[in-house]
Amino acid sequence: MAASLTALLEAPTLAAEAGGMSIAPFRFDVTPPQGHPLCGGWIKPAEEVDDTLEAIGWVLLGMGKPVVICAVDWTGILNEAHLAWRTNLAEAAGTTPDRVAVQCVHQHDAPFVCLRTEQLLQKLAAGLSNMKVDFFQECLRRGVNAVKAAMIKARPLTHVARAEARIEKVAGNRRLLLGPDGKVKKMRGSSSRDPELVALPEGLIDPMLKSVAFYSGTEKVLCCHYYACHPMSHYAKGRVSSDFPGLARKRLQQEEPGCTHIYFTGAAGNIAAGKYNDGSPEARVQLTQRIYDGLKLAATHLKPQPVSRVSWHTQDILPEVNPAFTHANETALIENPANIPANRIRPAMRVAWIERIEKRQPIVLSALHVNEITLLHLPAESFVEYQLRAQEAQPQRFVATAAYGDGGAWYIPTKEAFPQGGYEVSVANCSATADPLMTQAIRTLLNA
Image 1 (cartoon, helix red, strand yellow):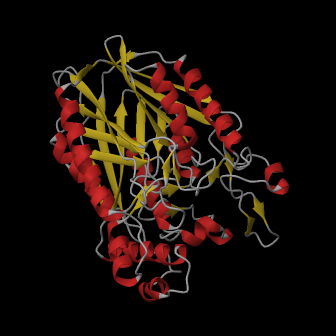
Image 2 (cartoon, one colour):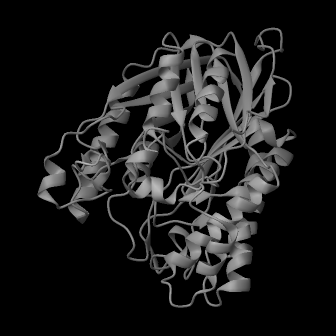
């Protein structure tokens, strides 16, 4: 079993001793151009823009090297592409990539990018693409400029607050219907009109939306929101959208222009809206309203407290490759023109992961501790159990989890899920050995 490679831990920073801390929110447009692949290239490419996509984040200064945290309205950023984002934002902020967290919101009418995958497709699958590299590089340039501009206008950080609110009729577990053999019989996805699936209970979820706000004096400068549910109502029609979480956030942003609002999708690898979503345009409106109501309710419970203690911690893990996949077999799938695009592009992503693990390039988990609050950053499509384990590891702390960081592993099921099979297990690039590595890394971060 692969072991955890690195623990980069620093002593807590006392704000007063550090001469005070400051915060610099930033945002920039990451809306793909017409014709750009969406969701990795296996659904209809971008034709129209229903609403724009953004990368929104903040730089924290005053604790040694700056820390950068960013949420991106993309499906996923994998492997070297994720490192490129962290490296460019780090250089712009005058810090190092290990002090940058980049998390995707995971909407599907959005880019899903892997640089090595694109190289493989160009070489082995003529006519297929998962991204436009020039657009990717342009987004990195926009990010660098946005971070530099924001740091000039950094505000003193004096207070922090946290709150939570229950979200009603959005999330449900996708893996409830098991056959007599213990295997997943049918998955309740992001939308469903199957009466049998809709009638099932919500199952294991985290129903709470969590908000963490940062203040400069009495002014709320930035507020981060966290909720664990796949963020899709309907998609694959070529219409770019930030979908219901993005629409709810944008509505709140219009109402509070002086505060930068950021939405993070939690550990939602096995969580979606299919119990309450039939995939209609009307359902998107309803889901948007329910998230918005949760955002507004949480805001009523925010009680600012002086920032007294801040620290940043990371843990590296190196999961093993899912034994169902081999370099030779996946390459053959890429090269086979009889396969549909999804069944050539996904194997290319698997080859990129296999090569990455051969090079021993780890995945980085990170946590920012502020007073009794922890902002936890997990990779890929982590199952909700990891988020719940994080909360159990330190029940006295307020733990807000953002998943969909480095997406190289794609799904990260629990070890108990692998024998059950199902979609998530069938496409997980990592093996069941990822579970103990993830769980131990989370515990180490929470106990730091």
